[in-house]
Image 1 (cartoon, rainbow, N blue to C red):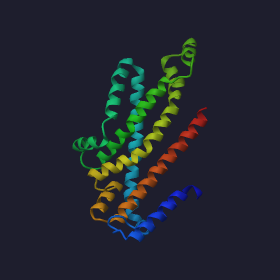
Image 2: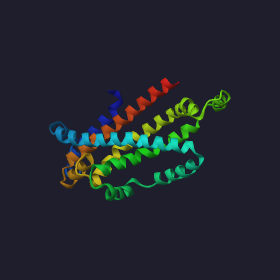
Image 3: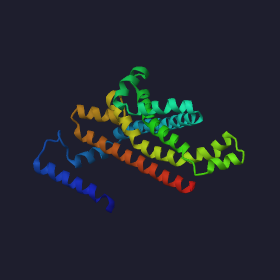
Image 4: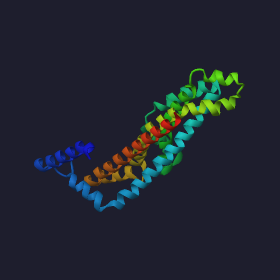
Length: 241
């Protein structure tokens, strides 16, 4: 509990400030009202949070898998590496907001576009870090495999791929929180359900308690995703050593 004294202090200061100044609740709601909406209307938050979390998890898994496969393809050929790596770096610099209208035209204004955005966001870290990990071999290990006459496939399975696992876990840690936020952003701009849509709807209807409550739920989910990814990375790295 001592870790969260800062959060408690902010909530107390927030409650005191809105009470003393008498600011309109449409501008900034009372923390008590936000908590009350979370407690007394859990179904609204759970239904939308469930969708956002599902799309974020599915997009994260698919994006990581796709990024890993493309990195492996790039590793297998210098020509493909010269083509794919620059393209990956170029597309990674494109703002996600600019991609949403394009994907919406291609996939439709529904959850398919939300899933596509999360896949793209998760793809680039997986591709970049896996590609770097495939080349980060222990000193002398490649020569040792060649001395023993190991085939390229044997070298890949028993040396190259295991060497990329720590980097792959870094990519997972970096991709987990943005997966939730990118799903929310897509839902906010063109979704019909989910936390992003709930936030937009609440803000439009001046239901600031629900808008703040949605932000709290999104923050909690992002933090849980990050801490889970950190724990998984620590566990894998300890086992890998």
